[in-house]
Length: 464
Image 1: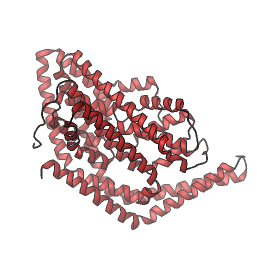
Image 2 (image 1 turned 90 degrees about the horizontal axis):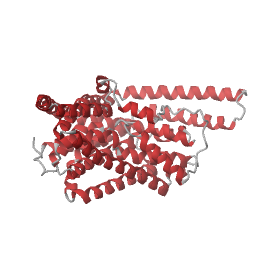
Image 3 (image 1 turned 180 degrees about the vertical axis):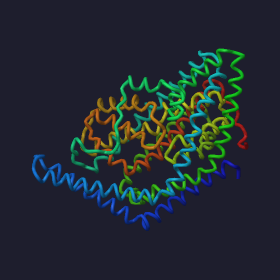
Image 4 (image 1 turned 45 degrees about the vertical axis):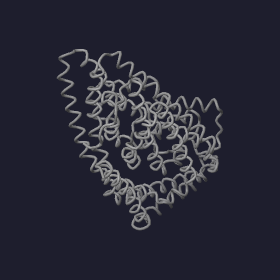
């Protein structure tokens, strides 16, 4: 068994063992905490239903119900805090791994992109590759959003919820972000490279790296020393990546055990239809992307998907596209993509080509509207789709980032943000699927751009 296959096997084994341990904890040591949380949530729902029926906010009953609501919220928060404390040894495993990955990602993107752009050479070549890359990204994003819209209208998973409209001030605990064009553009341009590196702002790092790489190429012979230096830095960080990846199975084990311990297997049956329909749509998106990839790459697209097993499994298990970034990069280069293309396209993909997140955002937004019986016309749905297309660019490849964008978008259409509460419980399960899809989308995009540029060579040997 090769080193890669061995790690994939251990990740998968950790995933299965994590589910097993999580289920055991859910029905044993965490049972009391989970029951207390469920009880508090049930009380909260009852109080909120009663609050909706009180028309006069000045009566004593309204004040009493609000007091009961505060007590129930406090009880739930207390129980959640105790449960989190009990799960600390498990969540610590995934937290350490994700921190290690974040430690690697910024310097890896910077060093590889500078070398990639400098090797591409003149600004015309950078513009040409960038144009082809953005053409693919925009097309794939639009495809994902439209597919999400079609599938949610076809399945109509929200109709079964049949919820009353909540009070306008209902709190979801998610702070919405509605980016204006000015905010978006100013967010892209870094005011400080060190700040962008410190906060892992991939898009800002990409912008600075493009300037730096083009300038390095422009100074000719003097720039060679810079290229050699950053090339060496990239190789060192990739070696560090190898060390960090050995910790991946422990992180997967901890992440899966914590999710199942909290949610239990019951959450799967409660939302089974919605989860099934969402994953069915996601699978269809995979098929469509692979078919488009096949039309350009022919049979090699299947070899690419075979190589992506490990990064996809890693993204799925940790619910973070970022966690799979270094491995995705490595596998693409072994597939035959030139390093200058990989280091150019992949970082951009992490900001502009999150296909799984795109499909999820239309699916989830319209699911919430359906749950409250809010009918959106075709024109409104297309408008929502275009707003999501804009506001989602630059979205971080981290857990729950999609919910923040959804919160900012649905408010525009008078859809209650409280509806996000329907998704918070199962969001970790959905995040796993969309993170894995993001990896698939970005790997196909990089391979396609390499092919378009005539830079796709024969696969390299798998052994390091």
